[in-house]
Amino acid sequence: MGIALIWCLALILIKWITSKRRGAISYDSSDQTALYIRMLGDVRVRSRAGFETDRRGSHPYIDFRIFHSNSEIEVSVSARNVRRLLSFQRYLRSSRFFRGITVPNSSNILDDDYNGQAKCMLEKVGNWNFDIFLFDRLTNGNSLVSLTFHLFNLHGLIEHFQLDTMKLRRFLVMVQEDYHSQNPYHNAVHAADVTQAMHCYLKEPKLSKSLTPWDVLLSLIAAATHDLDHPGVNQPFLIKTNHYLATLYKNTSVLENHHWRSAVGLLRESGLFAHMSLENRQLMESQIGDLILATDISQQNEYLSMFRSHLDRGDLCLENANHRHFILQMALKCADICNPCRTWELSKQWSEKVTEEFFHQGDIEKKYHLGVSPLCDRQTETIANIQIGFMTYLVEPLFGEWARFSNTRLSQTMLGHLGLNKASWKGVQREQSGSGDDVDATFEEMDSDILPQEPRLS
Ligand SMILES: *[C@@H]1O[C@H](CO)[C@@H](O)[C@H](O)[C@H]1NC(C)=O
Ligand SMILES: *[C@@H]1O[C@H](CO)[C@@H](O)[C@H](O)[C@H]1NC(C)=O
Ligand SMILES: [Zn+2]
Image (cartoon, rainbow, N blue to C red):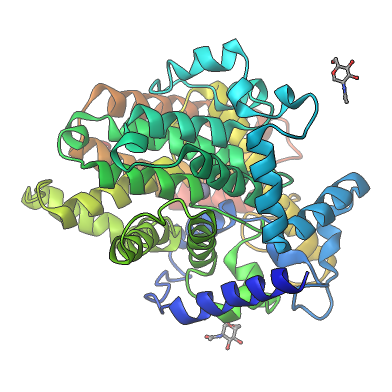
């Protein structure tokens, strides 16, 4: 316990020392886009690290255990906390785990042993229709470990970087465990989904012919870790509850900084790259940070206008490492919000999950009189309204530019689904308005006055 505590303190110290101030959040609250930016701020939020009053929560009035009212979950949560603190115990556990010494009936747990169907699915891992929910079931909830390990292998990274496969698995298990499985949306399945999407983008001709193994390595790690330890609530919530993370990161890209630092912590703990030079490891950590920080949706306008000007000038040169890394930032941003570009079946499930996470935050905000965040009020919002706004203000502009950059069949497929899914939600919205009582007057007004033009998708 003593050693574990020292480790924990050392990690916190490292986080403090290495933390850097990023640009301030720049959205304007009068801007419609900001609503959806804030919403996505919500989209990307809800895990647990934040909500352990006993350990790190800092709001004086909220017992953060309310997040886990289900007693079964509480048990697993506290079990998990112990694990998180006891790095050494986790290390021992996972190494035994991988040596196959303990765990009777381990065939249910070990991803080596995922059944034939999951293996079969991996043959089509580059398919845009890949069903990550099914894959997660077939791997007994180990989709992130299985998929990422497979992709490392597929891209030849294990060989190229001389990676120790035991360390790689251990690292991926730690990553998967640091996602909060009780978050409806921001859990390891979302991370696996983003990693799969990233893989699809890396295969696009423009990228695949210019990317180096180093680029691919960073992209996959960043995708797998980009929401690590997400508390299931958004940044404004953390700020208004005086959460320690908001203080630590000075109210700026609070979650993204935390995801990045958590990833760095696990990279160091796993020793996966211990055989590389210190210089390379530091470069890797900072470049992974650049990728993860780009997923802060409140910065989308800045990234998008840079992307747009490059495309207008036609000056992107992928032989240039800086340009490649910029494109990888854009690719990760696309991967992160690509849900509406998937088939309706998949897309709809994501929409339901993310809304559940928003509404859960709204319920807590109501209960504690914190002021309900935009899009989090289950009394006035609907999935359809939220999705239509999200698509209009964030997804369509981003994927429109992406399709200009990479005008391929995949891009056309994504835009096609996006259009169809939006039409489906509009159908749902019409039905709901038709039924009378459920009409949300605010949104109706917004829909007709503020959302008149569909952004043109080139
Ligand atoms: C392992 O699985 C078998 C068959 O599913 C079962 O009969 C046995 O009791 C299990 N053993 C343990 C230790 O759970
Ligand atoms: C963060 O925001 C809170 C609430 O607006 C404010 O009280 C606090 O001073 C801010 N902290 C920093 C470092 O800007
Ligand atoms: Zn995400």
